Length: 123
Image (cartoon, rainbow, N blue to C red; front, side, top):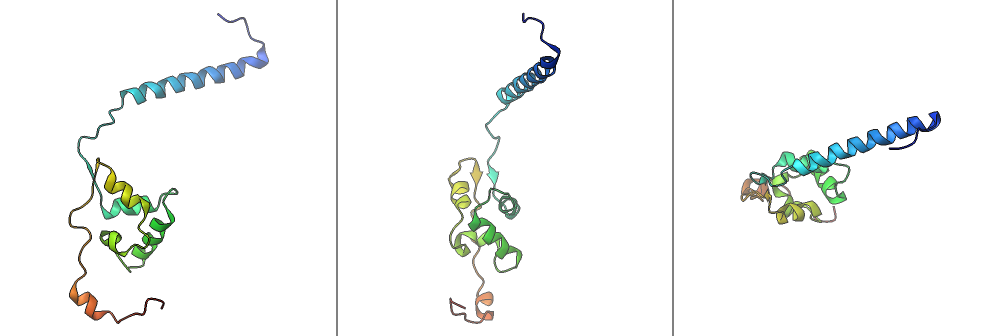
């Protein structure tokens, strides 16, 4: 048992002990958490948009999100249209708990190709 604390140290001691109790409760919650997912997470356009809006998103992903927002391209074609390919795509595809859609990238329709005028790459 500790000796009686001076009045000026008692408030600091109470805050310290409260923080220790919160830390212990967080530790117990972490121990009770099941880290195995019941099923793999499926990548969707919404998931990629949410990742791009994160403050930790790579520059390449935020740039591609801007292109998607402008209607220039879609999330389903990120593997083909993104230059450079965002690191998040490789990380998601390598994660065994994440399921990348089999039908991505979607093919470009012939009608879309013929309706677009030819552009010189530096324009």
